Length: 300
Image (cartoon, rainbow, N blue to C red; front, side):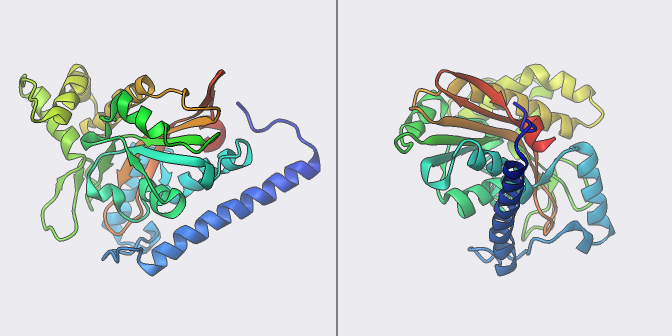
């Protein structure tokens, strides 16, 4: 669906002014949090990349090359909310929010998209996901969540895997606060890839989420291994299996409102740089209406 349809000049101007005010409001909320140190008093302040040294600037360049089109969480948030607010009348008070993101605590760092939506816009969240970002809540989890929607209201779901970058720009690695050595990010995806390439592992009922990741990524491991950057390809392939699972569990039977799906890859940048997000899916659905793809018109 294109938003570039011909409109009267006055309406176009009102739309442009409204969008500017809306984006400015979102920016003020986000910027105010960054300056105040957030609600939890994190040690690291979130700052633009231009303020950092050569190594971190190099990491930012590598991340941008690996995931062209990725942008800050605040930019994604303002771009995504604008058409929902302006065209679909989806407001904070008539929409409930869920996310299927990896449980890794770095995904709730300041500036990350899931935290922005949860803490500074919707104020609450239904967690559908677990390690790796897959929607382990399944059909039952989505049904329970969607039945909490306000009368005549809407559902918004954010989903996707994540990948970290080290201060030197190494994908799949991350230097966590208080640690001197790098660790993997996403640890669950990296472990699943290692397990798949080192031989078969039986399903483990006491490790169900990791078992699911192994089973879904197993057929893709050879393609990942042959790629020029295995960790980047791992994140992209993980996104595909997560998107497929999301689409298999959601429905529009909760009422007359809209179901919005925003999917992509969360990129954990070295502290204290801002996290980024690569949008790969942005659709609006409703009962008796074909899905409307907003990805290109909103994110380019």
